Amino acid sequence: AGVGSESDFKWTPDELDRVLDEGMDFLLEKQLVWPEDIESTEENGRIPYAKANKVSQRAKSRGKNQLGTLGSGNHYCEVQAVDEIYDQAAADAMGLKMGTVCLMIHSGSRGLGHQVCTDHLMIAEREMKKHNIVTNDRQLSGLRINSEPGKDYLSAMGAAANFAFSNRSLMAFNARQAFEKVFNKSARDLGMHMVYDVCHNMAKIEDHTLADGSKRKLLVHRKGATRAFGPGHPTLPEKYQKCGQPVIVGGSMGTCSYILVGTEQAMRETWGSACHGAGRNLSRAQSKRELPARQVMEGMRQKGIVFRVGTPKLIAEEAPESYKDVTSVVDTYHGAGICKKVVRLRPLAVVKG
Image (cartoon, rainbow, N blue to C red; front, side):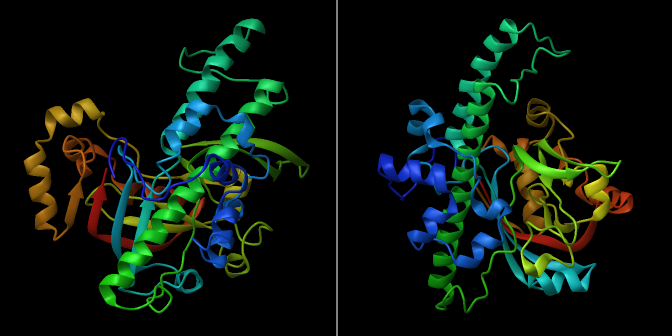
């Protein structure tokens, strides 16, 4: 964990390309994931239009030693316990009971994904000038979806998503081994199945039904958001056909997290999308000015939460007070009918980069 952290997993250039092209399918071949992990992952852990040859060597160089690492910022690994159930049938489908201990991993495509974005932003700026495309915000840029640069970016972004699926899967592999070592039981005997794995920064090609009943292929952008498909969607595994797709809403360091499910209303109103977290209440700079790290740590200790932080300055930046009230955010989504609450998870141990 932490800025620039490196993994114990080592990959040849050809193996890294296979991760980018094949995602979790390649890890299954290496026996690093369980077969059922794949069906419990968005897009089965493999974006079909991903192309490793559209990812720059600079991006690959940044990512090659980071597969299986947490990173820093708001990324975390938390040991949690289910302390409230709102929808018993959905909880049963997920294998969750009162007191069930869970591990929630929040990370992404690390330096590789960051570089993919940087590389293509430079291309986008040139293309916008070339085609006289103007936005209402200097921080916004874009590419025509069906242009060659647009197709290249989608392919590279898909490869970064495959990297992210694989990154989280390798951390789960290590976590399973750690639990096996401590409890002297196999991960299967401990019941360490995956509930769900979902993207949270992604533009993805999906089929949706419009208000007039017509069906369209859309490029759905979800930034700090997550997919929330409703019951009966053909992309969902059998176990979630009745209840809908699990929607993971992580809390901040020291507050509870939630698992919800998507709804038919979400399909109609938000292209099957929901929030990914509570969202910041204070900027990072403001948090460091207003929240003494020692005070934040003492507050967590009083709640009985064990924590490890690789980068000390993150204590204030990621303090619970830096974020909106996750319960209020979740209740808003539940009340609006976009998602339904299933379980609440209380943090027991937190690892931050």
